Length: 184
Image 1 (cartoon, rainbow, N blue to C red):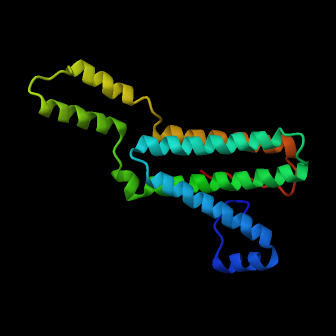
Image 2: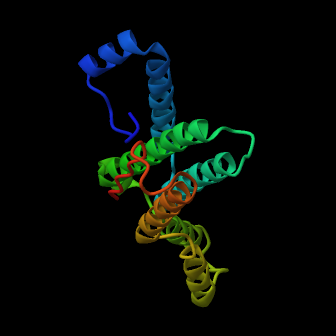
Image 3: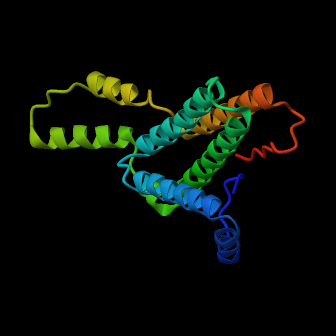
């Protein structure tokens, strides 16, 4: 559970019987992941999906920082919450990676393609083109400012490394209950 992996049906049954609270937390995390995956599927462009992933990663990092820096939360609770957030982060990375490999993502247009299509449609609608070639090129170049997929992966790595550094700083490297396996 702490690593963000999905449990088998027999593992779910065992946890439900032995620790109902942990089971409920696991189910809540699964529901949160499913909601995130639905938001990914509703994205209209590749860049929108990439922005959603970056926002998800940054949200997890902000949540971790707020918990770690809160002096009113006992260290044992901070550790538990940090592990939960790391699990959420790994699930988000896993979901995004699956989505990027899917045909749904491959079929999504880029914002640049949408701009090009709208320019072509506008040229077809009017015989006298109001947008010059230079202006059209500027619009296309402006749309390229958004993050590319490689930038998203780099941000994921940076966020996970920062989370790891925060956990090491606040919980110690040799803490046996903290194990962070980073695979992106």
